[in-house]
Amino acid sequence: MSAKLPMKELFDLPEGVVYLDGNSLGPLPKGALERARTVIGREWGHELIRAWNTAGWMALPQHVGDRIARLVGAAQGSVATGDTLSIKVYQALAAALKMRPGRRAILSDSGNFPSDLYMAEGLIRTIGKDYELRTPAPEDVLDRIDEDVAAVMLTQVDYRTGRMHDMDAVTRAAHAAGAVMIWDLAHSAGAVPIDMAGCRAEFAVGCTYKYLNGGPGAPAFIYVRPDVVEAVEPALAGWLGHDAPFAMELNYRPAMSTERLRVGTPPIVQLAILDRALDVWEGIDMADIRTASIALSELFIAEVEARCPGLALASPRNPAERGSQVSFAFQHGYPAMQALIDRGVIGDFRAPDIMRFGFTPLYIDEADVIAAAETLETVIAQELWRDPKYRTRARVT
Image 1 (cartoon, rainbow, N blue to C red):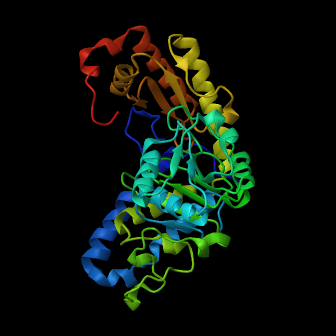
Image 2 (tube, one colour):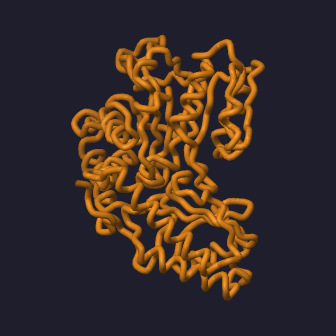
Image 3 (tube, rainbow, N blue to C red):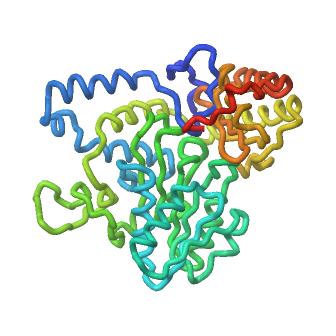
C-alpha cells in the first residue's frame, strides 16, 4: 500500500505559501540540510580526501542512479548521474548519431525545451557534416518520422503547456523507421508513471531538481537501454567514464556499463542532498501520484475557469494528455504571476503569455488548490497586475 498523500511533514515549506512551482524547482526536503552539513563538516572536514573511500563518495553516483531507476521504470545499473541535463542531451544525441551513420536528420518538435534544441544545433556545428534538425509541431511528430531520421529527440511533457507525448507510440514509430529514440524526462520523472524498460527507447535523460526535489543545480541523469550500452561511443570521453579510472591509461577505454557516460568528478554535496531527497519516495507508488495529481489539476482548472473567465486554458483538457502541470494563457501573464507570488501563491511564467502551475501531490492538497484559485481570482478581478512594480521583468521568470 502506498504512503498516504500528501506528506507535507517531509518538507520544509514556508508558512503561508502555496507552492505550485515544483515543476521548476522542488522544495527543500527535511533532512537535506543536515545531510549537506554532514558531507561538508564531517566527511570533507574530517576525512578529507579519504572520504572518497571511507564515506562512499565514489559509489554515490551509481547508488543515486539506481534509486532514480526505480522511479522511471528502468533496470538497476542502467542510470548514470552527474553533470547537467544539457550535457546528457548532448551525450545521448551524439551517441545516437554514431549508431545510425548513414542518416542525417534529427527529429524533435517545436515545443521542445530550447536548451535541447540548442545542444542539437551545437552538435551539428561541431560535427561539421550535413546533418539537419527538424522541428515540426508536436502533433505532427509521428507523421514526420521517416528513414532519413537518425534520432528522435523529444521531451515527454511540454514545459510550457504540459502536453504529453505518447511515449510508447512514438518509440514504436521511431523503431519502425530504424531511428534511435531519446526521451527527455525533465517534466515527467517523479510526476507521471514511466516504463523505460517497457517502451524500449535507447536513451532517456532528465534533471532532478524539479519533481525529485534535489535542489538548485542538482545533477542530471542518463538512461541507456542495457542491451545497447556497448554500442555507445561517448562523445565526451571523461576520466570517470573510463573502465579503470585509476589505472591512469593514456588512451580511453569505456566502462562496460552506463557508467561510460560519466564525465568528470561527481558533485558529491549535490548528490548527497539528492540521495536524501529520494528518501521521500520510499513506499510511494507512481500510479498513486498520478491519480492524485490529476484530481488536483482537474479541480484547479474547474475553479480557475469559474472564477477567471479571462484566462484561457493552454494545457490539454484531457488529463491523460498532460503531465502534472496546468497552464493558462493571459495577455498580462507576467505581472499577474508576480502579483500572485506577492500574495503567497507561487507559480511561474513562460513567454509569451503562459502562467504555469505545477501539482505535486507529495505536498499539495485540495485546500491549497482552492486557496490558489481564490487568490488568482482576486489578482485578476481587481486587476492587481496593473501595479507598476509587477511589470519589471526579473532575470528569472
